[in-house]
Picture 1 (cartoon, rainbow, N blue to C red):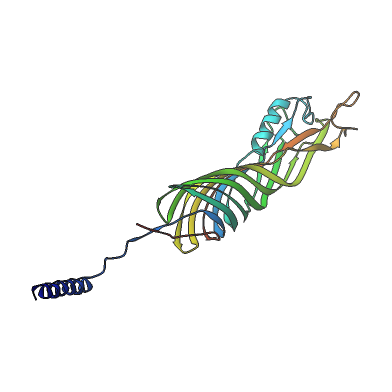
Picture 2 (cartoon, rainbow, N blue to C red):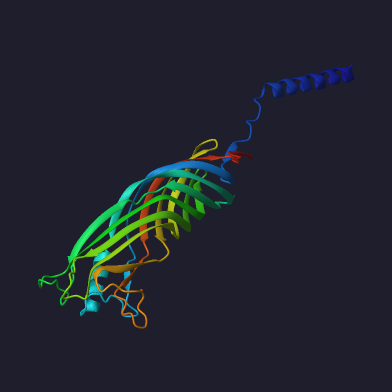
Length: 305
């Protein structure tokens, strides 16, 4: 009898424990931590503005004593014409285009590359007038005037850059960037003076150049990018771009007086001409914003602890 009562008591206690355990709340699930990743390819659009300046890279080749047009005082003439011909041209405008790139994230660091192609037109026109220094004079004894007109423009700008950044927060990246740049650049320039002959043995020097070529250089800057929703990010950045073209030479010929048979001068030919050289260069600041879509975006990556 006592054995039976003991067994019943044990079963009752077991049932009570099971019921109590069933009534206890379940353990809360492990917290979910979202770890964003920047790894993968992306494409996007950008728009902004630029401001800067350019110059013509103008100089006169006097290595063989060219620039005979004005008789005495050649060094002073050359210096004055080159000074006026190299005045800085300020420019500003709109830029916009598209970019493609790739990021690789390791820990808090993000490394990658980006290439972009943008509309870019540093358009500027300038006309300057000045006087040649004595002893260059007209047949009336007056100072000799001259005029230089320049026009610069471009069609597009492309950059190819490395990006290196850090993300202090999961969806924010701060980066620096540097690489190469190329732009399609147009230059038109003309020179005309008002010399008369006599007393000059040649007169009315004229030069005209029109060139379109690719200008190569450097692009570098910094910015930030913010992942504001799945697969989409907003960026803002500043770039400094330096561009330079190849040298272009043109023969400046007198339109009256002693006309040379050939240029440059040779045996039996004094060569009353000048060789004008142009190498346009630009220094531009670009501030722009953009939106990127990340194809291989795998985030947020869910990590359970």
